Length: 373
Image (cartoon, rainbow, N blue to C red; front, side, top):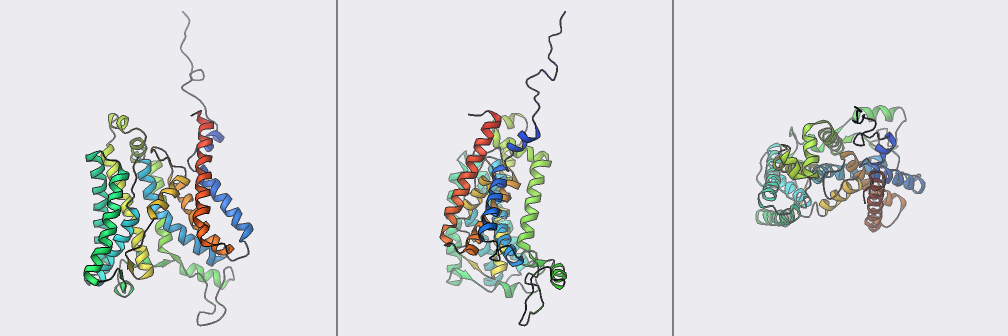
């Protein structure tokens, strides 16, 4: 009798994919291409403007880190198939809570920071719980919280302080053990070493003569790098990462396979709130104040960074590294336009063009490789 069983080489379900083809369908492709194009553009048109000296690199790295922090949370949540439009309002609300607790009420800054995290992460859990229990689109639920949180951010300081900007946080944070984790710097000795050997710029006159222009890496950048590394590891090296993809790809099939879809989605809402609060805390420590208008439009900027990085709006596909590259593009473009002397209002135009090109490129390459229509 003839054996009609197919060998693995004959089985159409077992198909070898070349490394090149695998690279082309990676979600980071659009972000990588966009990053290369942006750096080439500004290397040509702003190469001699100081954009790529130590101070210039620090400037656009800091701005990119801001976008990166909130993009990590937005990316994980979008891969899980949900959106959070309350991120921007959460940033303003978290910062205001820290200011009220530490300045208005006189509590220790470390306690104010911890309470802000607990409150905001609880709100994130509430967002997720409402989405799961009601079946409403997360777009609608978090849009409601966008207005709720922004309203409280304006109302509470007006009632307590009769103003919407509260300063004095820097003074309150003097000697605090937790504040430097968000508003300090690291690596000062390394930059002094580089400055002494003429490897980076130093001040030539004044009280700081001989000191390096860049005297440390802000904790904002450290937080961004840590969150990107954590998010990438979680997504690509853990079972929970597989659950995130499954929850966003096909929630019902994932449930039937034993994936705790509801718990995964709620935890991702909490993660988004955590990232927003990290951003807010770093911001109030940097400026020494909280303002009711902080964080406006940040939710859309986070989503755009994630989409530039290759994530699908429908969920189940994306990359934290791609989202980080999208955030890097944000920072480089925003600061690069300043160095080239271009009108700053064109930042949004430039960003929109990059977004459109990245999405088209990602979609085209994915369809070309997978045969999707």
